Image 1 (cartoon, rainbow, N blue to C red):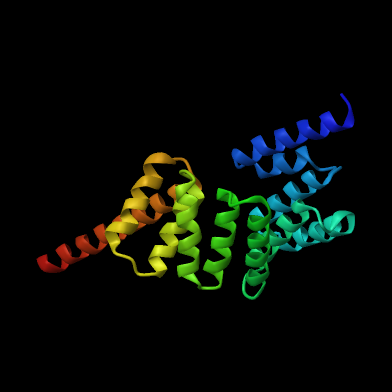
Image 2: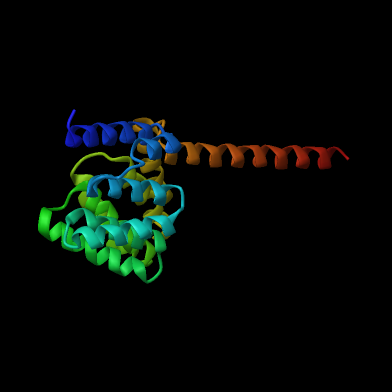
Length: 203
């Protein structure tokens, strides 16, 4: 197999491991990054495990190789999002530029929405997320919409509708697991409280 084929195969293996949340194996699959695609994926994995400092180093390397590359710009947006605060403005600007250039994909719309969420501009975030919803179902869109609606104090039934949709369509998604865990914790604490009240009433 030539180098390009080998590089593609490594990427496919890394993506499969990433989807199975096997981070260590995903890193090993592309440990010798030979192109921008692999470097971008490596940076994404670093952000996933909260090593934004390492992701930043890879972003700088990518800038040295090809500053104008779409992948380099995208990694820059990811790094800025992970940094948060004022850097979220730069991320929003990059995502908007990419949308103007390539059209509004679900991924780009979610990216710009998250940037606005970090800037506490929830009405703007909602606008982009509704555009993403029109393009098809996606767990990230639903999760971001639930969070945005919570901050906008939308009626509970509206938020619950999206939570139900997320649970039914993507039962194994990490966001769903987190929601279920929170619900279980709440039920457990509520039961403990009820039991304590019952004990107190019998004293």
